[in-house]
Length: 154
Image 1 (tube, rainbow, N blue to C red):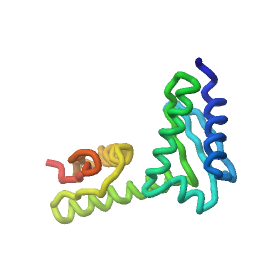
Image 2: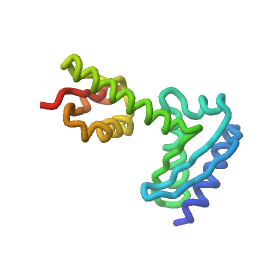
Image 3: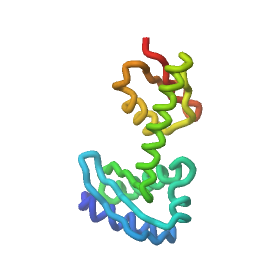
Image 4: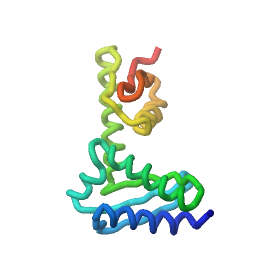
C-alpha cells in the first residue's frame, strides 16, 4: 500500500483545494526532516477562509489532509501547511506576546497568564523563553482552559 508520499501529497492537496473551490496563486511542497511543508499563496479572502480564527481551520485542514494521505499510503506523514505566511506572522506575534509577558513579570513581580494557545503555540513559547534565566513557564489547566503562565524564576 506504500505509495510515493510526495506524489500522493500533491494529488491529495490538489483534490482537496479543488473541492473547496480555492484557486491558489502558487503553492509548493517541501520535504524536511520533520515531514512535509505545504506553502500556499491565495487571495486575502480565501486566506481568511483557510486559516480561520487563530489558525483553527488551518490546523483542521492539516489533520484532514494527513488522514487522507494516510489512507492512501499506509504511513502517517507529518504535514505543516502555511497559507500566505500565516505561520511565520503568528510565530512573530507569539514571540512578542512572550516578550511582553516577561516585561510584565519583571516589572510587577506577578505571573502573566497568556490567552488560549494551541499546544504547538505553547510549546513554541516554552522553547522561546527556555534560555531566559529571569522567568520560567508552565502550562496549567485542562483542554480549552489550558493556559501558559510566565512567572519569575526562583
